[in-house]
Length: 226
Image (cartoon, rainbow, N blue to C red):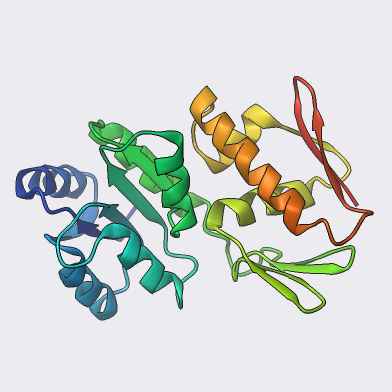
């Protein structure tokens, strides 16, 4: 990499923020560190970060509020939430509020670096297919919108990524382990449960067309039939 990757870091623990900043900057990242969500939002508007590393519990503007605000106009900049909260619902809340990944404290810097790079590698290029037709639906991956007649569904990043993967392999079995590694970056029980939740949500949103089904293939994964 010749060009530095610009990271916006919002972390109110000054010592931890400094450690993250210094560690990333030894790996060809340029890091702008902010101590609260309000300050981070100002920097976001003045720069074009390649990725955002975002603590959830912060003064002035919390991480969820920050993410929701920028997701109104920016659907593609990767957001990684940092949090000491580790329950399944906490992680799902992170994805629901616009996050692309969720890293539980304490974490290793190596894992953070790998996750940032993994998200950057998955940003679609200009030549990739964005618009899909699914029965009576249309789906835009970059806009994260699923439309059906007068119904418009705003998808989370993970919902959009799962649906895109299923569509790219429609009527074929998508191996669950491979899907988890591609979208979540890690194949484990915790992420597997999260994926099951997203599959259930997609089924409900696609229920207006009876010709569309997402079926479980026991012991293997999922198949989108359309």
